[in-house]
Length: 325
Length: 288
Image (tube, rainbow over all chains, first blue to last red):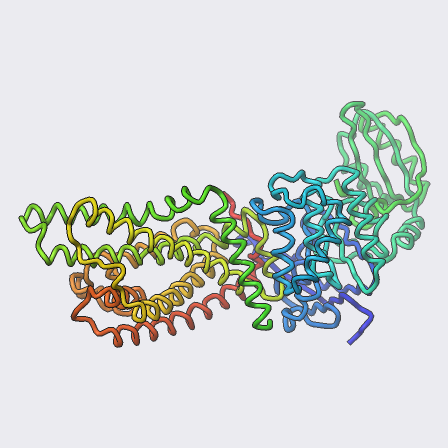
């Protein structure tokens, strides 16, 4: 048993029944993952990549089809009841409790589900309320809270048993910039208290870059890469990352994608200005002339062109072949 | 999970359940809501009997008075069935789809068990409120308002006979409620019909409004394995309304059927839990 590992998966596989005649859907395929103590580990991937499925298995909500998943060395299938004492889950964009109950009542309910002694629970709730700046809403019904404050309550509920392993499933989904930043700061402060682990799934590259000690990129149930954000970016700089602004947008995106040497491409359209930004990861710079020709063939005009510092998004594009959007 | 923690979780689930179910209005309106359905159902049946009897010119006969008392007690205590079945049939659906907390409750150390029991006990309390109010209103209406002299002496009830039967009956109903929760964990299409269907079957076959002997012979064996049948027998015996009944035999049958229901209820719930874990159903939303 590896004591320094908080989360470990070995050849983890999960199938779901598909549409009749189309076979099973592979949600997770031979996933091997190691997440250590005191680590914020990010899982990046598009919708349907398998992020939530992995979290559900690790949270004892779902059984794996094959392979093994361990939390602090304990098998999630065989020792689910022990694992439940030391984990918690916060999902973004979901109701954090009963709408008819106040913030305090919701937190108290969940504290009691974890069997916390009364005085200890009161103290814990009081601290969480302070940390999450929920003091003014303590006796407010949950249904009356704004989305940002609901998510703060959700996070407080996730912290209520002071879990050793916290799963955050897109925790900043739907939050404004300030609320999201506040939430990220709280999680980072919490992990500094020691002996904690966070597994975070997110769509936001910057969030993963800012928060995570290591990042795993997952697509179609497979973990494509797993390393620190910096190392992942360094790996990509073996190629070249470019940002090209064009107008109008490409009529045949696939024709550009299919140019030999284009590792990945993502596009962002600015509807107001009519400018499309292409982010490209190229094997080598010599491809650029072919690329510009193809853009012209598409009837688009290049407005701006420049090499850019690789970001986690570039890593993602180079591995998945497309952007997250 | 330690027993103390289990009790604490169940207690807190009860408190939350009570707040959710009772806090939506003021106490008077809540009590009215609790009594209106059983009382309306009772009055419909009772007036059919009264009108039918008056056509036969025997409205005041001892038989019909005795029967009305039998009917009132059966209907009043049927409130336990109604509250527990309807409350527990909808529980999983509401907490999974509306409040989205079912998965968070499931991943707590006690999983769903203390939570389901705690929430089921809310239905028991609601049922008890309905029973008491229905009995009081019935006496007030039939004996006070209509001067029918129905032999229903609420102060003369043998509590030593009443409580064992009611407690066993409630345990069996909670076990059946457990099964309804189990069905709803694995299905998201039955929450609105399940409670009504099961309580309707019990209403028809459990001896609530007419004696089981009047049922067709081929359904009587079903009535004779339903805990509600023996629950109502013991209750009516404690009210002195079943002179030919054998209390101890009925209590023994109630204990036996309760035990069987409890075992089956827990087994069905565990199977549903396993299936939900296999298919990932704890956070499934209804698609309507």
